Image 1: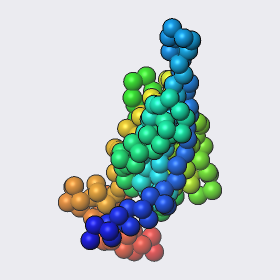
Image 2 (image 1 turned 180 degrees about the vertical axis):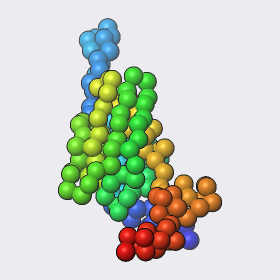
Image 3 (image 1 turned 30 degrees about the vertical axis):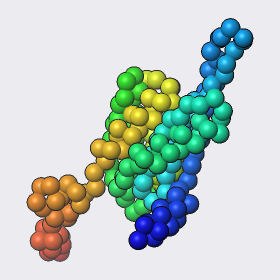
Length: 186
């Protein structure tokens, strides 16, 4: 049984998309000169509604990327998508000085977003979205603000179940109302 779980996990890891957002080199001055370290930011997603982000630090670039990727896989979240291509509704997110606005878009719009947000949407599997970053351009804060917005994203089905209604009632369409409207227009 443990072997099957391991195979499933390896198969799941193989269809994940990894996007390297940035690498930062830092230097520590010591008696013999400078010691360099690297910090990496990585986005991981399955392009079907799951995405995660991670940051890793190490003396070597590949090790920093590996650490960031492992953290991103651990912090994956599921985001409900409309028709598997865009967001259900417009939403704002914030983290520190970073503020982002995410807007659902019609088919064919594409991903209109900059920097780290574009990597998130590509890994998430969103094809049509308009995003604007306000405030800071720091990639850490932009990513965390975007994830703040995505965590608060709710599908109409979830809202309907919370309210004890049907999805059609949430959108203001009722089966009786449509029939009555059709009869009144004749």
